[in-house]
Image 1 (tube, rainbow, N blue to C red):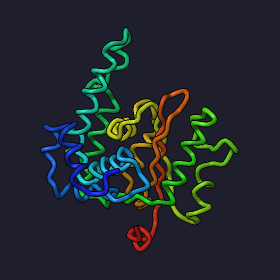
Image 2: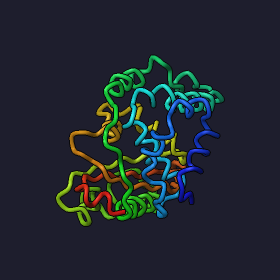
Image 3: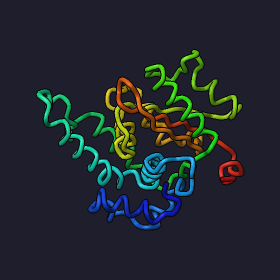
Image 4: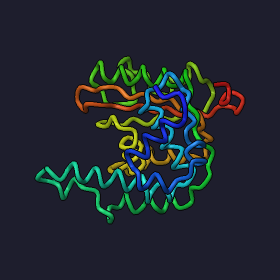
Amino acid sequence: MRKILLPTFLFLIIVTTANAQKWTDAEFRRANTAANATYLTNEEKNVVMYMNLIRIDGEKFYYTFLEDYINNYNAKVRQYRNYNELRITRTNSYYTSLLKHLKGIKNLPVFYPNDQLSALSRNHAQDLNRNNLDTHESSNGDKFSKRLSKYFPNKAMSENIDFGFSNSLDIVCHLLLDCGVPSLGHRFNLLDQKFKLNAVGVSIQPHPSYSWCAVIDFVALPPADIYKE
């Protein structure tokens, strides 16, 4: 696991050199709140970082890392006969609406990882894997709010679940575009300002039907609790 900031910077520069150079070291440092979260894998740490980069400068993210994601995604699906249906075009309504939402996103409070919340995310992701589920409900029927409220009572909370990706940028961009989800619930969780969501739990686990699943839980905590870690 990476426990210092520098290797994460190197990882980003290697993977997305041109676009990463458009971001400053100060922006990466601010976004990388999970750098020392030893309970997260490197990809899980990067999920937090990419979510924070969106909140630091939404429009810049749109024209840099989101572009990387779309280009890579379209290259991957080119092999399929229904490529024209699968590919993401620049006229896609979810793509165009996203720019409208991101233009006003600048220097929002960033997310901080939380050990207990990540354990809950991990438990649910493993439950989905074990029972081949694709829902916010646990195999015992508990809704996500019941799972989280046991440890975070009387707090605003939400949950994103992504299927099919193990790469952090893929996960975050897939949720941000939110294609096929009219409510844009995943997108609005990432851009939240209304509920003051500030603590996150992340877990990426295998899944029998979709290869991978990622559970991201959000809770609004008092500042004193956020900075404990």
